[in-house]
Each structure stands twice: as C-alpha cells, then as structure tokens.
Image (tube, rainbow, N blue to C red; front, side, top):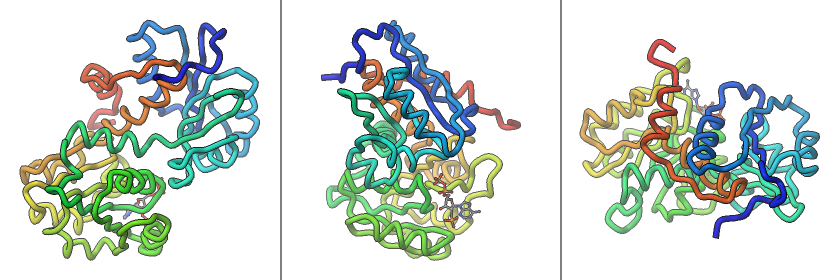
Length: 296
Ligand code: ATR
C-alpha cells in the first residue's frame, strides 16, 4: 500500500530539495515530471538552506509547510541527527537524503542504496548472483557515497566487498563500520583482484567532469575482469565516464550513474504524494537533455 501524504486536507502538498548550494539539483525536474505524469496537485521546489540553519528549516516542515523533501549537501549528516526518527538504512549510512512527516513525526531515511541496487537490477540483471555463490565486489572510493553503495551491496548479500581508496585509513574505517566480509586496500593494489571480482563500482569523484581522471590502476584492470563482470559508475557527468567506456570496449555489462539518481527518487515521491512512480526512458531522456554537454 502506498503511503498517504500526511495532510489529506492539503490539496496541494509541497515537497522540496534543500541544500547549499541547491541550484544545480536535478530533483525538481524528476519530481515535477512525475507530478504531471500522474496529474497530481502538488509542488516540488528548491530551497537554499544555509549551513547551520537546518534545524530551523525542519521546524517549518513540522509546522506543515511541506509534506517532506530531499536533503542534499552539506546537510545529509545533520538531517539524520535533527529528524525525530530515522530508519536503519539512514543510521547505518550515517546520513539522510529523504524526510517526510508521518503522524506528527519528522522521519528520515536514505534512499541512495535503493537507487543503487534498483539501477543495477535494471541495467545488469543478475549482477549479484555470480552464479549463485554471491558476488565479489570492488568499491572504488570511501566517502559518503561509498557508504550508501556498501549498505546496498550488503543488503543484497554479496559475498565480499573490497574497498580501494587513495586514503587507505578511510577505506579501513568504512570496512570496520559495516558487518560483513569487507577489506580495505590502496588504489595501487587493485590489480591483484582483477580476475576474481564480479562487479566494480566507482563511488569516488574521479572521472567526473571538472575532477581528476579515473586512476589508471583501476582502468588497467578492466581487460582482466571475468567476462560476466559488471562495471558501474555512480558519476553521471559525463554519462559515459572513461571507466564505463573502457568496460564497454572490453564487452562488459555497464550501469551508468543516472539510473541511481532516478531510482533513488522513487521512494520519496511515493511518501510525499502517495503514488509510486516509474523510471521510464522518457524521464531518462528528459534528464539527459538537461545534463551539461561535452563542452559544459
Ligand atoms: P562523496 O560524499 O561524494 O563520496 P567525498 O566524501 O568527498 O564525497 O569522497 C570522495 C571520494 O573520492 C573519496 O574516496 C576520495 O578519496 P580520499 O578519501 O583519498 O580523499 C576520492 N577521490 C577524490 N579525488 C580523488 C583523486 N584525485 N584520486 C583518488 N581519489 C579521489
């Protein structure tokens, strides 16, 4: 049963994305598309919230100005602390990206992991089977995005997670923070894993437009991965990152980062507006047309 919006008397429920800056957010495009597609009265707006002022903004939600919304940088960790209640996913990931009012309580969750696994299920069905003993996964990066990805991988019962990061201590902390078969290694050591990993996921900013390129140590393992391996990048600007390009050249299955962005939005929309929306090709094309071009 889809959740009903908190205020049934509110004929036009308002949702938001808050952050600082928030101007770059593509969430309004996605949620407004779904509102129109389902002929729903409702709104979704960008709200700039300065660092240190999230508590005051949360009071506006409690007072009924909004049914809920998305939280983006730099507020995701504070959102977890300031909400009245948070679920296991948000607590394990250590950050919340979605909040909503329910029976007078401001609740928080993190839907990044749902977006991550739903995108892999769509773009690379069977990615977690590795014929049937579970997948061995190489995660590149150990920042906030890696936490959501690792939580999702563990929810899906993967066999092992190897976290490779420039700063090895951060990978080690992450490996310790989760229960399961997790190990940490420096980026320079990934070659040793090439023949045994079933999935490679980039969670770092390497390869993103305007950021340093993907580490050659990682690019160089691509030709040595098993033929059934899947390569996933959570970066979506550009849509085809050099990592995905290398994987495609080798004939491997790939999953780009845009799908995660779209799928992570589904649970929030359902909570605020009471309808479970679909991620369609048409929506994907709409967001692609809004992404910066190669010269952008
Ligand atoms: P996010 O919340 O998006 O994950 P983050 O917490 O800043 O952002 O994490 C960025 C990740 O990209 C980190 O794993 C970072 O490596 P460090 O932990 O060593 O900082 C990684 N990263 C960013 N730039 C990098 C570079 N030039 N080379 C290697 N790793 C890089």
